[in-house]
Length: 306
Length: 231
Image (cartoon, rainbow over all chains, first blue to last red; front, top):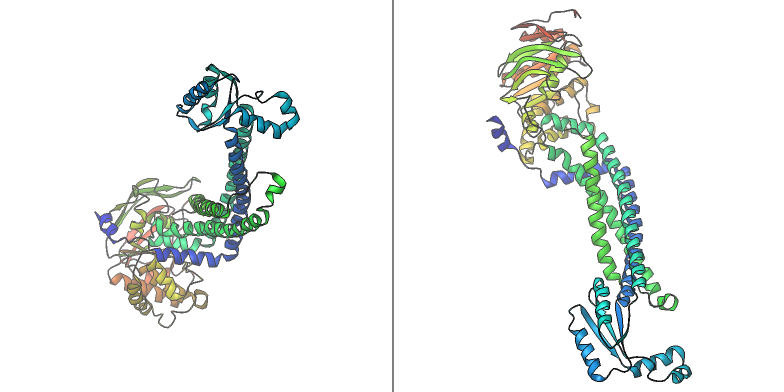
């Protein structure tokens, strides 16, 4: 078969060729290339700002939610030591319990003094507040079952669990994530359109070369790969630049706000710089490059007939 | 070998460009395809380059069935062809050397081979010393020579020339057609589509004459005949 004979003569696309051709395309359409990199950079940067905000909100909401996972089990004031031990053993035996802290009547009384004042507490008496177990679960979805289990026990005075507050907080966290997903998708579509348009223009300025390549018998991969690389380069460079800007920006803000936040917003804290930079670098590079190559793919599929 | 077997081509617009055309060109032949505008010459080129597919009938070129040729095999097929266009289609931003080099580079020839072959090609088409010139610095005949050198750079089995002398004066046209004949004597099948009477009469090779999509004559050692389209 002739095709087999010819096939054996086919040489794979060299990396050098792909890079040289992509570079030539970039140089030829440099203004367009720079514009596209800039636009992608702005898009990724916008995404980055939203991402940084979300990460910090999520970071803090996790802390807040973490606090909400505590369930307080109050024991009747008449309970003796043996009863308390029995209840404690029962709680500890549950595999979903991560941590248990016992608060005696005396400790509760002292805390009450700090909260409502010594005079009021003295009037109420040291046995007014019951002893309790503060339980932290390792699985929040288990909370309701655990609460029911505790209520079913004898010698239990009350079980307190702020499920409503937890659900509200979880709802806010879900909304933030949902909005971020929609926003990221919309910005992604915009970037795709821009990259695709750049590659389309590059294709139109390279149509003579492409026509000659087709007639001479260049393989599809040889014709298409420089354009894919170009799209990838737009996304990659856009990602690098936006990473540098957002990285420096975040570091600056972190240093400015760190320590100052307690003063204004209580227990809120920022995601550490190193952790943030690592996430930004990975997400930006992956997102930018995939975006670039996908943008090229759409333009090539539509405008490049091989 | 090129074989057209009862080939008909009707474009989407409804224009019937070829009606049941039959011909065969053997390896090493030199063939002119002549005819007026609209006679179907360009359609034959498009079918041979597989830019278009025949509406009916079969086309075989060097063992490839162009009707069933897959997208994947298309580049393999095209590597067996060399093409010279009337407008030369040289890349304006590349020098003479780079235009030829480009054709070899894109099919993966090594730079060592390119360095050996390009000077020989330039010598063959009498363009020594013009390596560094850009296309717009060349005369029409010189551009045609570069296009020819590029077309034969990858040693094609078949050289297709579409109106290669269309923009040239008679003297330059003869130089180009002599070069095409030289390529043919080296073993390449040459197919020249033209309506240039001078070059057809000069070489007196096989002439396939088209008229309104039909072959009206297919003669060896022929000269150009004028015709009027009956449609």
